[in-house]
Length: 248
Image (cartoon, rainbow, N blue to C red):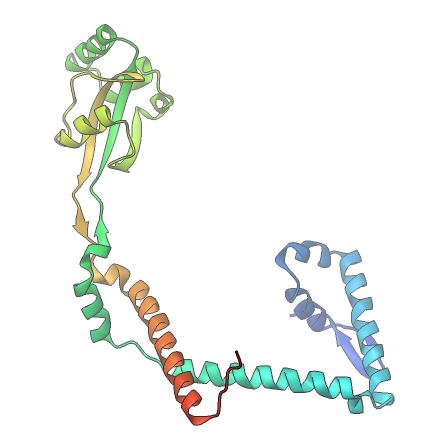
């Protein structure tokens, strides 16, 4: 990282590294401007102004000011509280046995839906659909027929509809598509859009997602739950240790 000295104020060096670190504390959308020559010049001026005010405050014993002391007390209290909470929660662990038990007891939450990969050819009339089927039966590939005859935008990719689960297509189309065997071509299927000829490329039956694929997600969820329980238990213990009186 470039650590070029950009300015020296009362003996203190302000470097490019300090400028770069300051930029990172700004919202992401401001970074492009702050990395321009004009943006860096403006930011450097702001850093210098803050350093000047800091020097003035030190020289005029502002550290003894009651408002400063009050604000420092609030900051110390907040930081001390956050550090304590962080240390408390860092002690919380999730055991392998706990992950396995949660997975076994909640398998219904980890179901992978039944899906198929399919292609189709869409035409306007039943006669046209039967004509297209005749060409396919005589040797034209399904993909060639889709590109030549289909009125669906998917024609450019040979009628490819990708992979989809139930509820994604109109009922008439879905009913036939999910009953077809892989590699087979349907008879014309009428829907509100016209007549479809469907070819199923692949089927993926409903299944349970293996533990190794979702182990990290379960661990993160259990860790969050365990940390919440630990926090509640700890604060309840403190309520019994220290006097707490809630006024109505």
